[in-house]
Length: 277
Image (cartoon, rainbow, N blue to C red):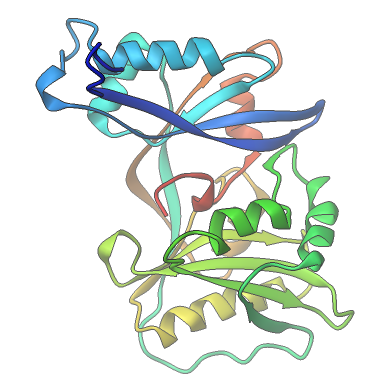
C-alpha cells in the first residue's frame, strides 16, 4: 500500500509453493514478512493499510488457479488483524519434537548408511522424491529445483545439506540442518525427506544428533505433522514433543476441494515450509 507520492506504508507478500494433492498439483502461498509503518496502524477497530493491502492481495492471488491455500505463522498482532479483516483461521498451536543432546559418544552408523554433505542436491534426490511422493496426500514438491532454491542458493547460506545413501547407492533420505536457530544453541532440522519405513532411517536421526553434538548444540528440533507416521517413528528414537509459541494459521480459497481440517490431517510439512528457519 502506498500514497500518491510513492511512500510505501504497508507490504503484504507470499512465497508460492508447488504442492502435490490427490487430484493434481496446486499452489499454496506462505504469507511472509508482512508489515505496516507504525505511524499508520489502525488497530482492530478500523481498516488500516495492513488490512487493505492484505485484502487486495487475497483478492488477487487467492483463487482456484493461483493460491488455493494461504498459510503462515503470524505474529499475535498480525493474526488478530488477519482474523478480523482477512479471514485468517486458527488451525492449531504448533508442537515440535526436541532431543536433548549434550556431550557424549556418537552412535556409529550402520554399514547400510552413508552420509555425505553436499553443496547442492543432485539428481538422486529427484529419484527420492518420486519414490516418496505417493506416500503423502499433500506435500510441497521437494525436487532438486525447489530444494536448491530454498537452501543452497540462499545468500549467506546457513545450512548443512546432507544426502544419505544405502547399499544400493540410492539416496533414501536427505536432511537440511541449521545451527543456532532462534538465537540459541539449537540444531534445527529445516527439512527431512525419507523413504517411508526404510530399514536404516534410525541412522539418519542418529547422524542428525551427532551433527548437533559436534557443533556444541544443547538440543535438536524437528517439525513434523503430529498425525503422521514419521512423528511417531522419531518419538520412538527418544525425541520428545513440546508446545511452541507458534500458531499455524491458514485460509482456504477452494473449500470444496481442500478444507483446513483435511489439510491439518494430511499435510507433510517441516520447518522449511515456513519462513522461520
